[in-house]
Image (cartoon, rainbow, N blue to C red):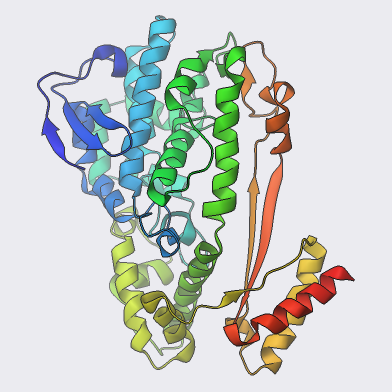
Length: 434
């Protein structure tokens, strides 16, 4: 990213009333992104700049080395798409969107991920945080807590409109399309992260035509966001791409394994700290032990300190913690995935028990050397919260392709030491074929 002085303000039709001289940010995905001076002030808070140091795809760079893009660039991209969409809708429906809402919706898109913890969703778990909250709740606190610089800037810029901004973000605002631009099954968040994750990983799967999708969206008489009936195919491309990205990138075996290493490392560190066998850094204590973590202290947590601490643990005497940390620091000695035939959830549960016995009998500690990852993600969900066409029908009724990828998709992975992988796979084949 680089800042370039712009000679003209952001056009009023794109983001509401003019808000001072604008700026242009050069983005690898979208090209030039125009922002207003007020939005620049939000971006230049310490709270928002923290997103530069939160990777979008957690540990996916172990499998895809170029997947090092951040929540910062994604948030700028979501803001850009929201600005474009608001501008387009105002052209189609001049009286449907007030200047205030045209200003607030792109800011809501900009701030939708401001509350993410280090490594994004990977650490969004009580296994890591003693003070556990979802990233949406943390984001709201960061926007409201007087100790955080973001809160002060928002109050100064927006005044009482901060309440409406929060309503847009939590889905309680009317008309509802204002929130659906930010959070729905076809929103600017998903559109940006799927395109950006494809770009960052090099995953050449599917096709998302951003321009045609944005041009296809309309506002229904009921106040919702709908798609033109003759543009079903562009939404098909988007949903099929999303399905492939989960299969090939988000659920990649190395992604699952390295995430498990990190979470287990921190859980082990907490255990050792509680038994006074490990001294934690201030930031790590805030994550693992502080049960009254404030928004200000939370806003000081980034990927960088986690990586530094975990890599330092590779030199500790504790074999469990140093084992996980050494693998992450060197990318060597990884556990190996047990390749499974097609199986049911019940078979996977039975296999877990049998693999535990196998790992123990081979001289390993099953608690630490048998890694079980179950991935579950809902595909397209029709009807309630689904994507509607401009005739009021759910898009599922017009697309056999979308119907084929609707509902939940899941996967189960087991990882064991390399020396017993073949035996584990033989055991799995015998069990599943019974």
